[in-house]
Length: 184
Ligand code: SF4
Image (cartoon, rainbow, N blue to C red; front, side):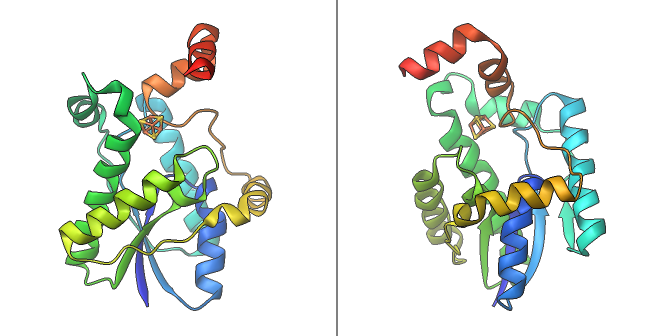
């Protein structure tokens, strides 16, 4: 089966790439992440992913546009649901490219992270599959959490300290919002 894998960053790709290629899937990657801010951080994550591809030979298509405006236009006034909107934006774009490339399925490295809303990603992936007419390949890549971290360290990939958007950056560093998030 050939799969178009949405890729959020280099470190989250280490485990899904290894396991899927070893199991014989034909993989291509697609980087589309309008949620990564600010610009310097976006460039840094792109560079880390390029390094991953250089070391492994993974074939990646990059959407190199910085998507701050695109992201904010979707999320503003809906901040409480921002992660669901964010997943959908990225999965819809990936499914459309998968269709163009005649891939048999699409998936996402978002399914690797223990910090994401895993079941929501699965549900949205399946909804998008219905809407776009291309199957969503679901797998719980969290099984390889430690292997992915160890691999990223061994490859000397930049490992980001927050999820991506400017809201998550504040939650990571601002004690007030961190406390609020724990309460929520
Ligand atoms: S916290 Fe992460 S998943 Fe949620 S909106 Fe921000 S970048 Fe997207």
